[in-house]
Length: 277
Image (tube, rainbow, N blue to C red; front, side, top):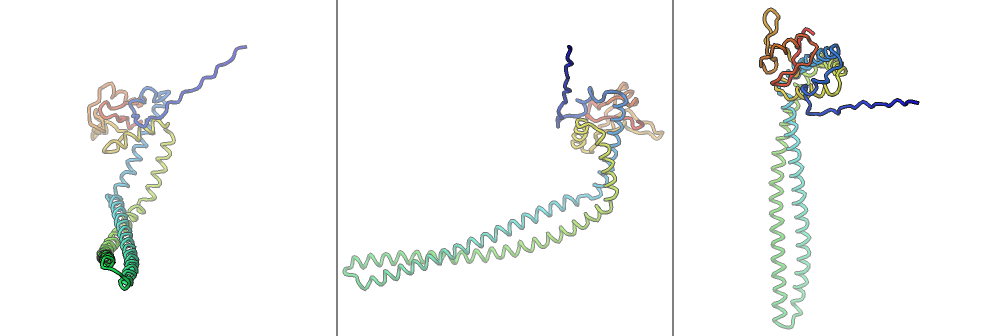
């Protein structure tokens, strides 16, 4: 009895570096499918450009908001570090005070021993210890003074940082309100465009969509799908790529006009389509 051997379809993994050039050979199984993909890509590009226009209305506000938020984070971190420094200086003061108390106890013991000495040698030894303890006490007192002065400097820094934070917070709030106003005014239109975009992307396979996104994100004008350039007054299109403006060969112009083949610009790697498809 003959057995049927099952064949497993090999799925080519998506390469994030992939562009449309590498998709030309297996872009579609038929002319009809190719035409539908080209139409979907063209409509997706048009939708993305409309979304880009709405985003451009925001100008540099998103960057300004992000910059102010970053500056605020840095100022608040600086404020926290300065507070930690004050805590450290206060701890040093407490440690120095304990040291002074211990030194004074030791010095009192040595002074009480002076009344019971029997020779000059012992007397000199005790006085030497008292002298050393006195020097250590003086150093500890100096450290306390320096720490207190440093604390005052830190407090002055805290005031300056706090003033800067207040100003930045005010600026940030104003920028956020301005940005929110623009976003709110275009929210409905942007939401509708995002829905359209989802509808188009759902029709494309992962490899094609990945190539589209890669080229779009790598070009200064965010165009991955273009038409011929220029468009004349009579509605006819020219013979140059609408992305890089290099001239297209006659055979490729015929393929573009047919709307049934994936035509890639040899210079910039963008898809060139016939908008009449």
